[in-house]
Image (tube, rainbow, N blue to C red; front, side, top):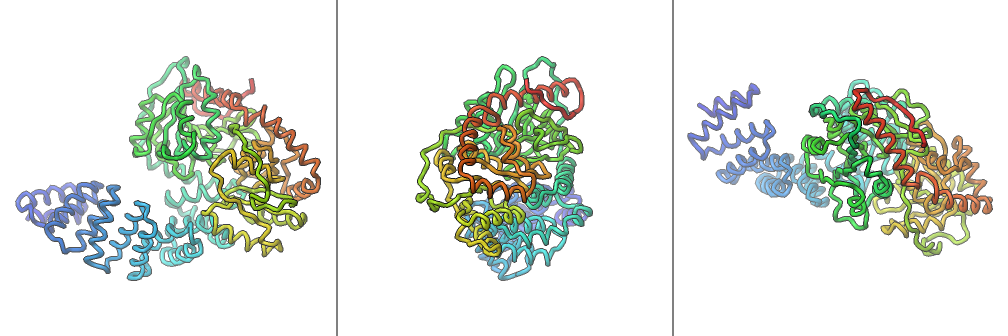
Length: 626
């Protein structure tokens, strides 16, 4: 009777009553596999995945030849974040029932979480051989193969959109896949449906993907802001907020926290290291909150950052609530999010409001338009008008983006780099994600006008699909694909900087400007040519060049950009003058002057903290250069 009562209670949604009834039944008959399974289902529905797995495992011992029990066990272990156990259970399930598509899918998920990409893809292909229209499996396989075969991924996404046209996560990831691989036309065709989807409401995961990808696709700040505002509102609604932090007196030292998954051998640490070391420790106490364990990465970056900060807290294994509580326990006054919507970012932590003042800085540029962000740090170049944003804007006086100085190795011969000795070498070491049609058209116009020039691009293994697309686009633009030369990845920072000196001019991207990539070029003495744009993302290099006092390297539009590049290609004396002046500027001015950048940032943080301690709301302001 108790088991039947449990079934009835579960069907009407009363999970507590169902759990109690099944537990009574099992007290009377502990060896009833069916009741164990039903209680496991109930526990799983209640979010108690590990408890559910325990019931399924016991049921599997009692009924070892029932595939469904093993499949349920695999699903429970996945939800309990134990992929090794999930893989074992899923393999047992498909051995008992090779036609169980869901079990094959879960086997793939478990393998993927274990880093076994090929095994994961094999499992998903087994599932699709039995059900070619299984949406979850199609999605998982598409996500898995996109880095190595974006065309296959695009075909899979097309199938998914035909099967589930209103699934926003499929829609967003289809666009992201195409754009990463420089399949611009197909990506823009999908983008035509964005406004309709935004009007009817989109899911958080889809908005998160689009908030990152959309700025790269067009210099369109209005549309980007719509997506980001929708995402910020959704994350804020879903958050379980901490109670307000206890007030501190105005005289209290500012507890400053930096939140990032990129404390280690990452571009974020490369630009931030000098600033952290330059902070005035009598004015601010600096805690680094790490969202990713990078302790096994090579290089001095993590150690240098730990030594420069007052404290380092590893949150990589903490859930959102625990992470927010750990930040609160440190009494942080100003929490600076360095990630935004980049990979590894955890916006849900900020949505819980662990600090009285929460700031977005650097990240992937622009703004977050999120109600849980009080301020974004900017400058007058990337933000000409602080009005109209969800967050307040604090504009630094010289440049919003810090940089560090590094040793530069000996300049290699061009031949050793695969470059022609006598050519004009235009460098553009940006991620292919930043290359959009207008930018590429300008680059090709420059190459057509300077027939002895080559374009030197980033050539990591992960960029191979994009490289093929770029060569094809060059051919279509009447430029020989061989004039696009792809540099291998340089793991040594000094060697990477040194090879910039083999180039003549760095050509910036348009919709999203080079950031740390431009700083590398500038620090090595390679002039960077950029152009002004509409959105903040488009004006990052312009911010650097304004601070360094090189207005002649900031073009007004694409036509001006092309004309200036051609003129510099034909004027070696002008290029030599730019190099000499650039070396002097990098040695003395922001953004490479870490002490000045730290002083400006601290002044901004003091104003923010003072307003919060006085009970005043965030308000935009400009930091004075004192």
